[in-house]
Image 1 (cartoon, rainbow, N blue to C red):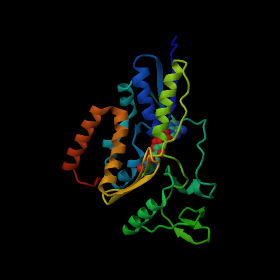
Image 2: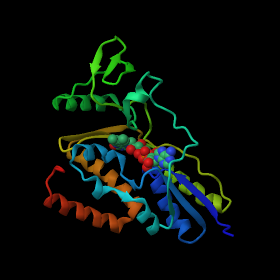
Image 3: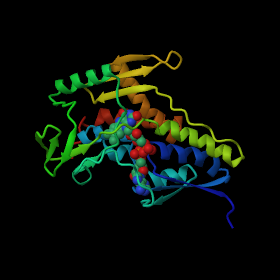
Image 4: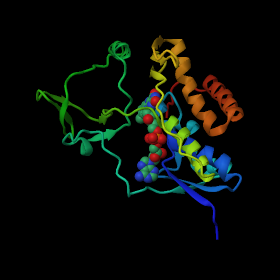
Length: 268
Ligand SMILES: Cc1cc2nc3c(=O)[nH]c(=O)nc-3n(C[C@H](O)[C@H](O)[C@H](O)COP(=O)(O)OP(=O)(O)OC[C@H]3O[C@@H](n4cnc5c(N)ncnc54)[C@H](O)[C@@H]3O)c2cc1C
């Protein structure tokens, strides 16, 4: 009989996939524990890239990770399936019609005032109308009703409200250390969220953001090329956690070649 501890992680997203990769490489490979990932889909795409996939500037097929292939390489098992026993807390504040008539996105943390103002300016520059200070009271099939009862027509409504910290990566790291400790009867590592700041990317137009100084605790406003570099490095760090340095370097090189050879927009 298999006496190994069996660690099951549900959800191969930003946090879960980094966690099973680390556990597989450290524990699964040496047969110290059996690691299983359960996900409702067959592939992983890093969600902060979704806006580029939606606008056609990034090819999802080239940037997705097949769980089965990845599992084989990193010594964990993959099980396709949807867990039905745990309810995710809805972030729709009980707004009538929201569950039935909206597509839901995980939302981003609230931004500092200077960043929000810069983002609003950029949206307005791109002719995107931004309405604030007007709570949505109801969502209908083809419109949104505001608190003052004005009605906004909408062909597709996407719900992205409700604050949720960008803590997946840090939680995966803490859980990885705790699970490794637990196997040797060690202590759980307490989770302390470390705010490194926020970045907002407007594709090739601009990027704005603020970085938190680790020691001073004060934030520094950045924009343009420097901000874009930090934004791109976030994805590369996620790739390093999933593939290691060497493969990430090769992927980066292939991305460069692909961008030079293909049109900037995916046209089919
Ligand atoms: C468009 C967009 C842009 C974003 N940009 C940023 C950004 O710039 N910076 C930032 O910090 N954050 C950003 N976020 C938020 C960030 O992507 C999330 O906070 C992060 O992905 C959460 O990671 P996670 O591991 O908790 O879950 P997710 O990455 O959401 O992964 C969840 C996984 O669980 C699976 N799953 C869900 N339910 C079940 C079930 N019942 N059974 C089995 N499997 C299930 C899903 O298939 C999925 O693979 C963005 C999100 C979106 C949508």
